[in-house]
Length: 334
Image (tube, rainbow, N blue to C red):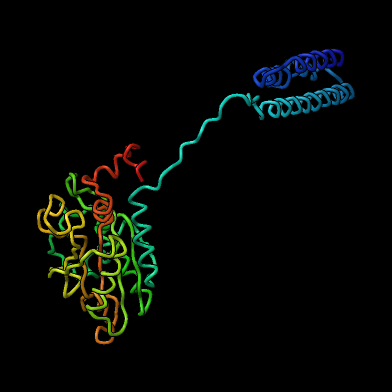
């Protein structure tokens, strides 16, 4: 048996030296160290030997296993290092890597956030799967409001839903912090709208909130006027039209003068000379009650703009679906 093991060792090392591929080395390992290897077959005869003979054969067998295992590891390391640096033909022209682009939606969100942070607002985020209390109840949206109908909201289970606006984050912040508060909340929102050139079941909003003592509608108008002129240009005009939102009172729609036709009337502004960009208003006292704010001491304003709407107006895009189709011909323009 000792002679057989020594002959086996000689053969194993010879085959290992000839192996040039990792697959060949693995075959040698299985052949000489595997469960059905020649060494295992030889060692089955140990039962017929004396105790002294078993010890001697076992010692030789273990030395063989250790040496062949070490040599296999050395061989594998050498092959890996040899393949690590492929041969390079320096005469071949290089390949220029394509540069990526920031998505126009992301770019618009960054720009909006930059403007408001320069005005002293903080950027905060919150969950996209939201509870009814934050999405509706604390925002003064009653149970019988059409927005809470299953056809107008993506309900997940019980009172859990995909948020339909980013205003719930405003409530979460007010629950944890006391005024003064100045925040903006960018993020995805979800509404079961049919997809067309101006609607999508998922889109992006940036909503804002400012709460402090003696905040007035004039503060709201001044803040949003600065924002819109920085976004669309110094010459743009701003208009506030009376509207209704459950969580603000008084409320207003937010318009800018059409910078495509200079208010002469065109297809983009439907010949009105104005473009709607969002909504705003003074925070309703019922919202302050929901977060235990003293509405006799504090006041505030809130606003919201659609990021896709802003981007479409700013870059002259006529179809919201272009943002989500991942067409490189469109995206590379930004």
